[in-house]
Length: 181
Image (tube, rainbow, N blue to C red):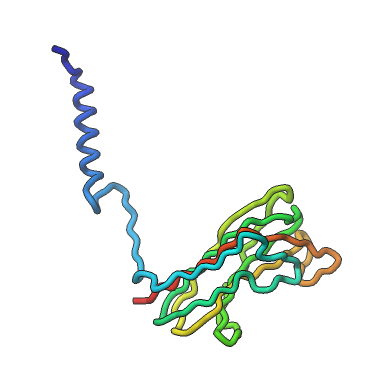
């Protein structure tokens, strides 16, 4: 008969106990706590597998305008994903979100722009997100906005002597409508 080494038996026993502890729901070591609102009432998504925007310092037409219905006061969680190309090394791509009412009037927007830069030889991709709190019931249009800015130097905004461009493609804009409690 083969005998098991006492250290091996202790290690196997300890492993079995650890698995048992980790298998108990709600019990764990260093577990983070989270909280969340109610289940989203709706999720709205608009995608474009080709070019969704050609951007320069003058900006761009609205990117993936998406109509969103808000039935009760809610938070809007907005994600925009895209692949970027053509951005020169001395250029920054600036992305932001806007929310317009059903008449096209500006209601709210992000308080800043996300700055993105990359190697001009690469197709880079990424996602930006933002949440808008306590949006009243109604129909809204949520959209992306973008412009380029030459770096260094003064902000672009129509600098026709150096009007760098970028292309956004394989785009998706997703809006989660999350009712507030």
